[in-house]
Length: 341
Image (cartoon, rainbow, N blue to C red):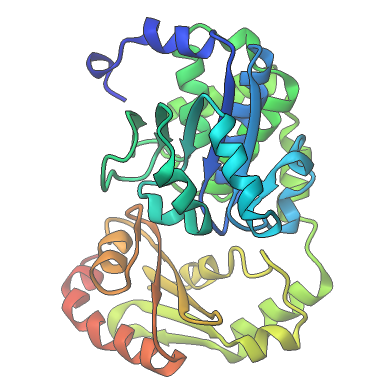
């Protein structure tokens, strides 16, 4: 977020000139996507803006308690005419937590057809310029943290309500897996402290996100680790693969596999973990790594994905077997890097 590229006074004027704002975030929204969008929504409303949030598809159950969540517009539940009207009537569009319009899924055509001013706020490594203004800092653990730092920079902290603080802290906690990853810099804890002073209840947020899963989800986790986890010691890697049939057997709901990919990293010697989950038309990959191994480069090169060094995502259009075969074959290229960790 280089200061020399931004006129903070002008940006402050944008925030303080009430208008109709549309906030967008990515498909398959995670805690940072929803938390950053809702946190920004509450701040902008305090500043007098009229605000709508649009997400391509529904968010997981463990995020629906967040203040303001019930007001979010889910594209898959709305008509084309409704969406066109929403975009037509807004004055300004914020894009939160994604680095390419492709991540908007079914919302992308409406965004590309819009001609309003656009602002990107994101912590993913930049891929392409698709907004008029970009506030991007990949060194931060979450977009939610970046939003709070931006608000501080504009001296607007007084407009951060309890609701906004709660949503932003939820975003920070989910993208750092409960302050365990992507948070090895002291400034993030200063932000957490600030949000707590503003009213965010850290303990409640943790409980709602990490301790409210169903019994079916816990059984699915047990099955995944016992039956479907494969360790590849020669590559210091491991993976879990789940088909639609297996997910349905445990009455899978959206968000139930959240965090599964992290478990193999607790095994001594494993530095790279992947979760494969079968979708209707592709295989979804969640990739996590320890140390300097670039999970994002691996995802980008072979699996139509990207993300952060230690946390990335991807997809492959093929069967589960084809996807796993490809994964195991391309690991050879990264063997030296994996063994060096």
